[in-house]
Length: 121
Image (cartoon, rainbow, N blue to C red):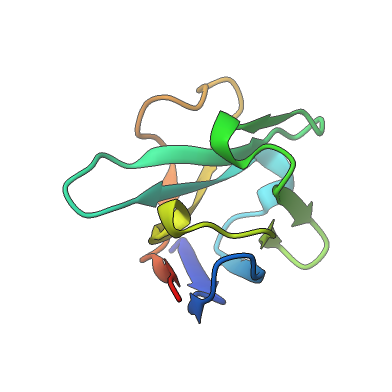
Protein backbone atom coordinates (compact mmCIF):
# COMPACT_ATOMS: atom_id res chain seq x y z
CA UNK A 1 0.00 0.00 0.00
CA UNK A 2 1.38 3.38 -1.03
CA UNK A 3 1.38 6.14 1.54
CA UNK A 4 2.60 9.73 1.25
CA UNK A 5 2.68 11.78 4.44
CA UNK A 6 3.37 15.51 4.25
CA UNK A 7 4.57 17.64 7.14
CA UNK A 8 5.90 21.12 7.74
CA UNK A 9 2.89 23.27 6.92
CA UNK A 10 2.36 26.21 9.25
CA UNK A 11 1.33 29.84 9.65
CA UNK A 12 4.21 32.12 8.65
CA UNK A 13 4.62 35.85 8.10
CA UNK A 14 5.27 37.27 4.63
CA UNK A 15 8.96 36.99 3.80
CA UNK A 16 9.39 33.93 5.96
CA UNK A 17 10.43 30.40 5.09
CA UNK A 18 9.03 26.92 5.46
CA UNK A 19 10.32 23.47 4.61
CA UNK A 20 7.77 20.85 3.59
CA UNK A 21 8.64 17.18 3.75
CA UNK A 22 6.95 14.13 2.27
CA UNK A 23 7.71 10.65 3.55
CA UNK A 24 6.81 7.94 1.05
CA UNK A 25 6.25 4.28 1.84
CA UNK A 26 5.21 1.43 -0.41
CA UNK A 27 7.06 2.75 -3.48
CA UNK A 28 10.69 3.49 -4.20
CA UNK A 29 10.66 7.11 -5.34
CA UNK A 30 13.85 6.58 -7.34
CA UNK A 31 11.67 5.07 -10.09
CA UNK A 32 9.27 8.01 -10.19
CA UNK A 33 8.98 11.69 -10.90
CA UNK A 34 8.11 13.65 -7.75
CA UNK A 35 6.21 16.90 -7.36
CA UNK A 36 4.44 19.34 -5.08
CA UNK A 37 1.04 20.74 -6.01
CA UNK A 38 -1.12 23.26 -4.21
CA UNK A 39 -4.79 24.08 -4.03
CA UNK A 40 -6.40 27.18 -2.64
CA UNK A 41 -10.11 27.35 -1.80
CA UNK A 42 -12.27 27.23 -4.92
CA UNK A 43 -9.38 26.62 -7.29
CA UNK A 44 -7.96 23.58 -9.02
CA UNK A 45 -4.85 21.80 -7.85
CA UNK A 46 -1.85 23.27 -9.66
CA UNK A 47 1.78 22.26 -10.03
CA UNK A 48 4.22 24.11 -7.79
CA UNK A 49 7.39 22.18 -8.56
CA UNK A 50 8.29 18.90 -10.24
CA UNK A 51 11.49 16.87 -10.36
CA UNK A 52 12.12 13.98 -12.74
CA UNK A 53 14.24 10.89 -12.15
CA UNK A 54 17.03 12.50 -14.18
CA UNK A 55 16.99 15.71 -12.18
CA UNK A 56 15.03 17.99 -14.49
CA UNK A 57 12.95 20.52 -12.58
CA UNK A 58 9.80 22.38 -13.52
CA UNK A 59 8.58 25.31 -11.39
CA UNK A 60 5.51 27.45 -11.77
CA UNK A 61 6.59 30.97 -12.72
CA UNK A 62 5.42 32.60 -9.49
CA UNK A 63 7.74 30.49 -7.32
CA UNK A 64 10.91 30.47 -9.45
CA UNK A 65 13.89 31.65 -7.45
CA UNK A 66 12.03 31.22 -4.14
CA UNK A 67 11.16 27.52 -3.95
CA UNK A 68 13.41 24.50 -4.35
CA UNK A 69 12.29 20.90 -4.75
CA UNK A 70 14.61 18.06 -3.84
CA UNK A 71 14.51 14.31 -3.37
CA UNK A 72 16.35 11.86 -1.17
CA UNK A 73 15.99 8.47 -2.81
CA UNK A 74 17.87 6.70 -0.05
CA UNK A 75 15.37 7.88 2.55
CA UNK A 76 12.39 7.92 0.18
CA UNK A 77 11.54 11.54 0.94
CA UNK A 78 10.66 14.62 -1.08
CA UNK A 79 11.24 18.15 0.19
CA UNK A 80 10.07 21.62 -0.81
CA UNK A 81 12.08 24.54 0.57
CA UNK A 82 10.01 27.71 0.39
CA UNK A 83 11.64 31.10 0.93
CA UNK A 84 10.39 34.68 0.67
CA UNK A 85 6.83 33.49 1.16
CA UNK A 86 3.97 35.68 0.00
CA UNK A 87 0.28 35.74 1.00
CA UNK A 88 -0.59 34.34 -2.42
CA UNK A 89 1.37 31.18 -1.57
CA UNK A 90 -1.34 30.33 0.95
CA UNK A 91 -2.82 26.94 0.03
CA UNK A 92 -2.94 23.27 0.88
CA UNK A 93 0.23 21.66 -0.47
CA UNK A 94 0.17 18.09 -1.76
CA UNK A 95 3.03 15.69 -2.38
CA UNK A 96 2.81 13.59 -5.53
CA UNK A 97 4.76 10.76 -7.12
CA UNK A 98 4.04 9.71 -10.70
CA UNK A 99 5.43 7.38 -13.33
CA UNK A 100 8.03 8.88 -15.66
CA UNK A 101 6.64 10.35 -18.85
CA UNK A 102 3.21 11.29 -17.50
CA UNK A 103 3.96 15.00 -17.62
CA UNK A 104 2.82 17.43 -14.95
CA UNK A 105 -0.55 18.73 -16.07
CA UNK A 106 -2.97 15.95 -15.46
CA UNK A 107 -3.88 14.17 -12.26
CA UNK A 108 -1.69 11.07 -12.05
CA UNK A 109 0.09 8.85 -9.61
CA UNK A 110 -0.24 8.86 -5.83
CA UNK A 111 -1.02 11.74 -3.49
CA UNK A 112 -0.62 12.70 0.12
CA UNK A 113 -3.37 14.13 2.27
CA UNK A 114 -2.03 17.69 2.09
CA UNK A 115 -0.53 20.16 4.53
CA UNK A 116 -1.79 23.71 5.08
CA UNK A 117 0.52 26.65 4.44
CA UNK A 118 -0.79 30.05 5.49
CA UNK A 119 1.19 33.22 4.82
CA UNK A 120 -0.24 36.15 6.75
CA UNK A 121 0.82 38.95 9.04
